[in-house]
Image 1 (cartoon, helix red, strand yellow):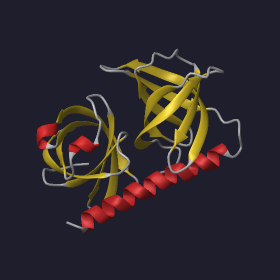
Image 2: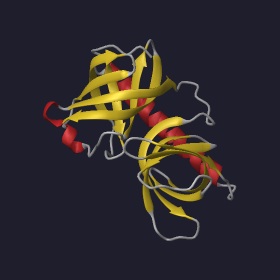
Image 3: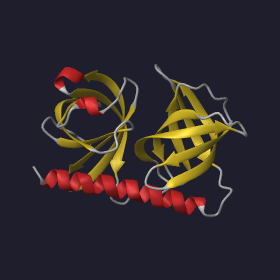
Length: 205
């Protein structure tokens, strides 16, 4: 995905309830500087946060999973590092789809809820960021509240310490036959919403 300065892109951050139209100011390898068309104060963001970046290049819609490097609130700018990206036109459901939203997580039968950030999700697993130090191989119970309400169980299969938090890779453990259908619906809603926004955003320029 060769994003150049001047490209109009989509930004999604978990603190916002909407998608944000932005323009690329600078592009060097996998580091981008983008300026939001709307006030950055609408986002409650911090370095290290996961951010979704979307754009249309040569009639293909791409979605990228990014980390927020820096915020310049005075000039409405974000600095982003792209972790990975791919076209979503024919994306399969077992491939992880970049997202940025909150989820509540509990350990076992505990009633204590821990707030985590979901960075990507698929029909088989998900990746999360959080300041909470969970044990490797621990099963977590997720509550996701977006366009559809979803409860999931997933086991930690990978753990790494980042600068500001922990990153976990999890495998979903299905115990209800309806859960895969609900998750599939959620992924399709997110995919269609982001793809349609990018198309309209591009057409309006």
